[in-house]
Amino acid sequence: MKRQAGFTLIELMIVIAVIGILVALALPTYLDYIARTKNTECLNVAAGAKLAVSETAQDRGSLSAVTSTNTGFQFVASDNCTSVNIANGGIITAATSTPNGAVTFTLTPTVISGGLEWRCTVPGGTNLVIVPAECRP
Image 1: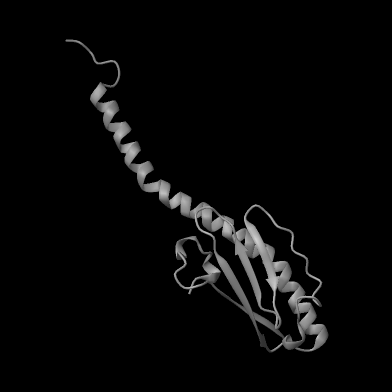
Image 2: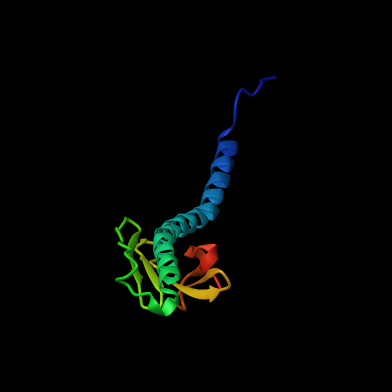
């Protein structure tokens, strides 16, 4: 009787097929994760703008006194974040430039007792899979 010393061709083909199926299922999820991570970078850049708005509102006494020029915030573009703008009233708009889906975030401040509360929104029709959790409805 002859002993088998290894795997047969059929066994190896089954293993390769199983690995191929797992990759086919995991790859789209991984690509969405990468896009969401790149979009999160832009929200992290916008954190500096949030701080500038908060300090200016505290100094001037209200959000209505906050303008794009009196906050002193200067944006430096990165590979994944094309713009961060502060509008009158402290509303911040951050735009991403990811190839899997560019997203524009709008950060709106609301005065609460002792500070500001921020609400993050994205335009309707945005693929929510690539939007960070804090900006999903």
